[in-house]
Amino acid sequence: MSLTEVLSVVALLLFAGFLAGSESAINSISRVFVEELEVKSSKSAAWVARVIKEPARYLNVILFVRKASELTATVIVAQSFIVLFEPIALAMFIAVAAMVVLSYVVVGVGPRTLAKQNAGRWIIPACVVAVVMSKILGPLTALLIAIGNAITPGKGFKSGPFANEAELRDLVDQAHERGLVEESEHEMIHSVFELGDTLVRELMVPRTEMVWIEGSKNLRQGLSLALRSGFTRIPVIGENLDEILGIAYVKDLARRTHEYREAELTELVSQHIRGATFVPETKTASELLKEMQRDQIHLAVVVDE
Image (cartoon, rainbow, N blue to C red; front, side, top):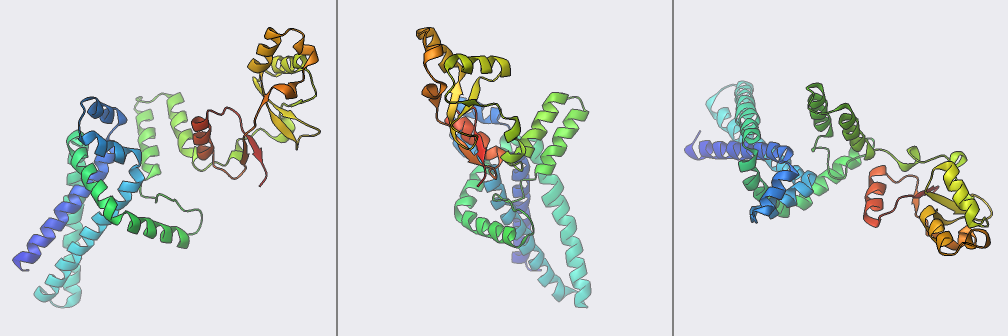
């Protein structure tokens, strides 16, 4: 191997190792660390916050470049060994064996261990490099992920499958086994993962079990139903269950009867309703949760598409 080839392989493996460590650092860092950087008015906080907000996007690019670096180094070594050894099969075997060992140690074990031990120091350069690479290669990785999803059976992942949910679940399980996470916290964290794959139709109250009130009922009847059912928000219907007029809030009915006592008998529930939010049954629970948090909605009506 020429000096240029040796230096190229070393540089590629070191860069791949840095990227492998960057993956570990990004997965290990907490939002508390980012908040501390922001409190210190660190310029680096903006870079880190940007990556932590959308980790999958940047991890996809890091993985792509790391794989490309390792493969390029392997090709260079293989070409050089073909000249040094005969037959070609022996040269290829030696090249592959050497690169497997080097990749495992230089790219796999060493950098990941160092990054986890020094995540606070590693995270800043890691995020800077990740953002720069994403600007250049982001569209390419997005295209490759789209192609991969298209040819893969089943439902694909828009952000790619590389931010491994299984690894995160395993970490939670290990923490629970060691007593670091309580049983209730363990179940809650797992339920968060499941939200992404759960459709709202799996969580909704069935039509036959839904508590509702006709819009023609008066306020006293509405308040009475709320007390009996224990619900503070009740769907209001017209002539049948397919005609949902809106949502009655107990606090609105109670406020009106407090302001005007006779209203509980003279005014109808339909006069004091708020608009209902309708969502398709195929929407995922995680998407709906984000919308409800954003719009401050507490109840949604699931409808057939």
